[in-house]
Length: 62
Image (cartoon, rainbow, N blue to C red; front, top):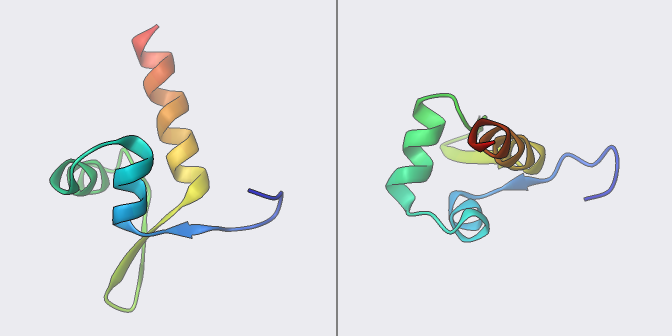
């Protein structure tokens, strides 16, 4: 991802990136552990939010 680019991912793209199921991704969104926005009726997750989630999970696991 280029600096300054706000790439928005779909839930299926996040599922593939994190290798998680649909309900788990929505649970992470609902619990605010994974940031997301609504665009019309669609839910989108900023790519930076996925990177932040991974970094936080790694720190918590250490």
